[in-house]
Amino acid sequence: MLSAVLILASSVRLAAAATAQGFAPASTGPLVQTVNYTSFSNSTLKDRPTCKGKAFNRIIQVWLENTDFATAASTEAFETLAKQGITLTNYNSVTHPSEPNYVSAIGGDFFGMHDDHMYHIPSNISTVVDLLEDKGVTWATYQESMPADEFYGFSYSAKNYIIPGSADYPFYVRKHNPLVIYDAISQDPKRVKRIRTFNDFANDAVNGTLPQWIFVTPNMVDDAHDTTIDFAASFLEYWLLPLLADPRVNDGETLIMVTFDESETFTEQNRVFAVLVGGAVPAKLHGTTDDTLYTHYSTLSTVQANWGLKSLGRGDTIPGLNNVFAWVAAKTGFRNVVLPPNEVPQFNLTGVAPGALTSDLFQPFAAPNLKARGAGGGPVLTRPGLNIHLTVASLPPPVSLTALNKTSPWQMSPRTTSGKAIIPCADALCA
Ligand SMILES: *[C@@H]1O[C@H](CO)[C@@H](O)[C@H](O)[C@H]1NC(C)=O
Ligand SMILES: *[C@@H]1O[C@H](CO)[C@@H](O)[C@H](O)[C@H]1NC(C)=O
Ligand SMILES: *[C@@H]1O[C@H](CO)[C@@H](O)[C@H](O)[C@H]1NC(C)=O
Ligand SMILES: *[C@@H]1O[C@H](CO)[C@@H](O)[C@H](O)[C@H]1NC(C)=O
Ligand SMILES: *[C@@H]1O[C@H](CO)[C@@H](O)[C@H](O)[C@H]1NC(C)=O
Ligand SMILES: *[C@@H]1O[C@H](CO)[C@@H](O)[C@H](O)[C@H]1NC(C)=O
Image (cartoon, rainbow, N blue to C red; front, side):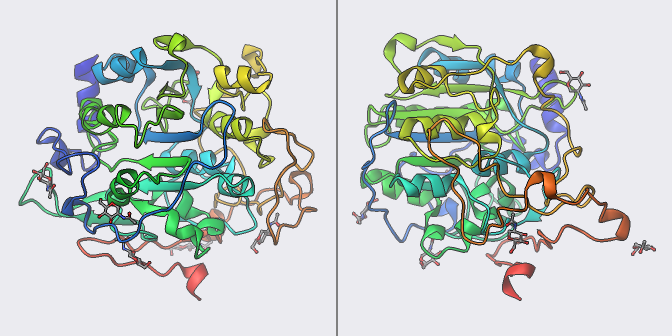
């Protein structure tokens, strides 16, 4: 098993440079700023947990990369986490490859995307950020090795701190930073400041001002993308385990979810390891498992149930796919739905969904289902500029732009950066 994992990982592009040497931490501690993250924090959030949730007052999602459930489950760091929390044994990604999964966790859909290209999503499409702000819940994303706050580039190569003296390494990629992809967030001058670096995480945590909803993306070596599960496990031992014991991060009412964007084996159901730890998880549930069917949409609906939020009217309101984490469902009175096995979708399908973010089966963005009711009980939240009459049912049939030598109008040409921060002008945005 282990050797198979290593062989798979070493065949991954770019892996050789990073795995030639074992894990090395980017800093001397998880809450110490470091030059290895390119630039230091120049601002501190002033957030306090103001909106009390029914089951938790803060949620921190940490997303790792491309690992099958069994591989993670048999690794010591994950066994350690499992003993301190609830392991979700039937948590599923929604498609392949990476980027559409990240986008789904923020907007409740991947809009047909089936690659990792550079996209942006128009500002009339709502996200979890709209739902949170509507109730006054504070939020931020912290992206390891992102060179500066608000960074819009496709990737960023920095000094290789793992193997000193070797070429700059692409530690940061936009495809794992879903909030920047949504114009409603990255084109809003106030919101974009909440797309923050890992040095900011240290700064905000030390100052006791971490927000209530947090999405953490470790860099391309620490999240196992270019490396092995053992490398990611070492990262968790360095970064997460100390923070679990630090009340500035895990304050007793904090829920921390560690999971993966997608599985490694595309020919199997897209089940990934997910574990719920942190002070908000009732002690009597430590070391237990929960076999309810969950998806990335479950994280959206769990957050909605916890704070009584409105919904997006997309995947977050599809019964059975939006099941709320069981102990939160019990506290909030939400009834989860058990789908018969033949109604559970194949989460490993790629390139079969039409949408605005595919050139093969292109359709315009549709309005969400305004009649849907989510786990928070409120109505569907809509943003300015949304044409509510453009429903899924009224859209024209999908067309292949690829056959016409065209791409989706929401796809941009990436200008990959290396060494220096060259922020590309997004074609559609800077015209
Ligand atoms: C950068 O990373 C290397 C490798 O772990 C480490 O030895 C060094 O101390 C780090 N630099 C700083 C300033 O933390
Ligand atoms: C510092 O602040 C400026 C202005 O807000 C911002 O553009 C820049 O990215 C910040 N630096 C870092 C390291 O985030
Ligand atoms: C936040 O913490 C840092 C130490 O990391 C300190 O230098 C800074 O002054 C603090 N900022 C605020 C606004 O409290
Ligand atoms: C998806 O996984 C199922 C098993 O759940 C498998 O039968 C199917 O062939 C897989 N699909 C693809 C496209 O690999
Ligand atoms: C959303 O906005 C985009 C850009 O203005 C527009 O092309 C699209 O038709 C709109 N979609 C809906 C459902 O309102
Ligand atoms: C598409 O582009 C390729 C290469 O630029 C060209 O050879 C081909 O004729 C084009 N096809 C169409 C349908 O325009």
